[in-house]
Image (cartoon, rainbow over all chains, first blue to last red):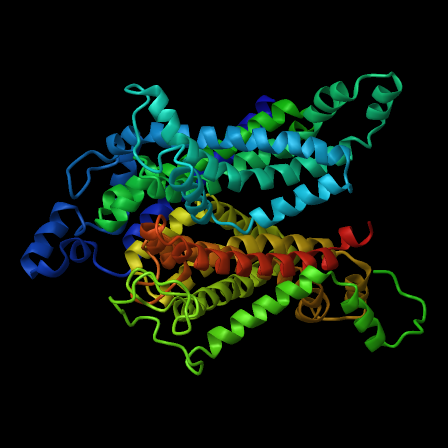
Length: 315
Length: 289
């Protein structure tokens, strides 16, 4: 186990370094002078030169990368060019909103996906299975922003059950916070459950054909116990991997959902930084999100190895 | 791929039987794609009102003889906007995955066939690129380059390369040690000839199926970027920005948001259906079930 951990860790470090390098290069090598872009129409050669000097654009590329990286390692992501707010503080202030959204979405998706997958696997090929699989396939073609509009139309405009916008911090008004989170989380969950359901369903069908399931049946165990205890755990390995890998999609979805429902999370910060051309924030958010995604995948790998001892001994 | 016994049916009969065995939804999806492509490419020749001319006296109208699908918030013809929007969705939707298919496909086949250090380098690079949530990367790069049709196509195309690389590599690995490749090598075929004549045709079909699924994903990504206001700038109509604009009229005229939404859904679904059918047909593992 320790050896496996070391191997994965040895892989993690170069990937993280590559991620910082790529983020930096995107910001630095793309056409368009950053200073010129930031100053816009009012730029004069003098102000451009002054700004280039201020933000260190007149330094060589490798030096700028190393000093940026050095700053990040000491927790200094730089400051917003617009507001002077430290980038890391801006990210951390909005992180809880995004985390709450993604956690609620993933939980809701699992609560939809697991029972459906079990029922489908048990009666695979039957009409229930075919209908649910069909709906899941069709749902894959409905993008988040479309689902968000549909939910707003039904639950906020027609039924008037839930607010479409208006975020409240959990500390101030827990109930209001949850109410404001229902539609955004549901939007993301609707995009996630078909993927999770398909994966668990096919693994479950395979597990149900194993000998020990037949054995459990022969012993006269209850159907419920066989499905939830004997079959679910060995079938859920791919589910966990996919749920982890999906975090990348979930982050992309969160950007859209936060902007539709006006939630003050990381996604709104990113979109705002794009609109106002606040490149330090943009660069910081992209790095933060990508690094977080890499770390989550690393954790998923570890959980996977804990759950399935066979993985540790491969290679 | 076992050698088949002498087949009595001619190749054409066999092809026809194969086509007839494809499910109905496959043909419906293909028909919808054909309609959209035709409408988009003939848009200038069709007797349509302008998609960008505003008419402040005819805002948010219901369908009528003058405006078959009604008008939007600024009195612009919905049908014309949908059809001109299809141009943007299809241009980006087809051209961007084409970049991924050609570059990613080539890298994947080379990685799967040559192996060694080159393979490690290609796979590692693809892994790093896959570490970025695609929409976030697309947003960031579009912000720097500026949202034009060409830039959107390049960016989404480049983002698709690692996925194509993975698919092509996996397929090549599965074929590289098969008997027909060994036979070709034993007969003295050059490496290039083996790649071109033996591996490429076998890897191409699964890649094509993946390409169609990538078209569906790309249309969604382009729609999302437009929806967020980072896509092709207005007044050019795009399905994503039409849905975003429709939000303001959701209460009084929901069709303004839902017409482009339904059009986009049907198009994305159609590419998914066609791609998925092809994937099932070409996947050797599924074929043996």
